[in-house]
Amino acid sequence: MVLKLKVARTAKELDDVYKLRYEVFVLDKQKFTSDSNCGIAKARIVDQFDSIPGVFNIIVYNDEYPIATMRVNKDSEIGLPSEMHFDFTESRDQVTLEYKNQQLNLVFVSASMLAIKKQWRNRRNMIQIMFKTAINIMQSLNSTHIITTMSIESQSLCNRLGFKVVGMPQWNEAIGDHLIPMLAPFEKVFHWGFGDTYSLDDLSNKQDSFDKKTNLPITTWNKIERRKISREYLQNVA
Image (cartoon, rainbow, N blue to C red; front, side, top):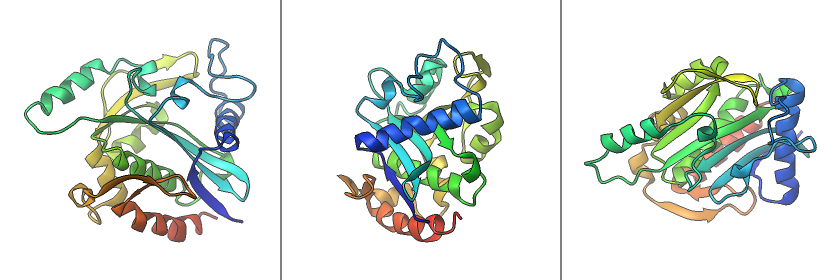
């Protein structure tokens, strides 16, 4: 068994992402079952946020079989995926006001479409692998804040990551689940992932280059952390 983690770039890898979402959300969890959900086509789940600049679809393979995926989006002219379900305008305005007198370029990102095959869902460190890789990508994007919509059943996990609820839970008919809007400063989520081992101030040497094998962004931090993930996590998931 060989586990490989990367950002999907080829047509095959992206198709694996979309099909894995369908397998997990529709066939396994019975979500996205409404006929009004136009994101489903030919046993795949895909939307407009998969085809714009600033999207990263993480995928993990067990040998050649996809077993886990997660999406990271950078803010754009059409907003973020979570804003398809909730209006985050007030939360964005509050953050802008809070940082008004600071020399900080606010960069909002989102994490969504976390799908892990059932038999791998409770394997040791799989969630950590996905989240730490997402944090790595967000750091390379100079992220300052993360917005997301989560199922109520995942709220306690998000609270531990540093997220705060910014609206009332709502039933989403298209997805078939109760969703709750949440927001977190990126620094808090980063601290959850890496504690006191690193600080954001130490990561000033940001680069726009990408690893040729994994398509993951290369930073001073991530050169060290990717070795740790591959050695300590991916080899121990089984």
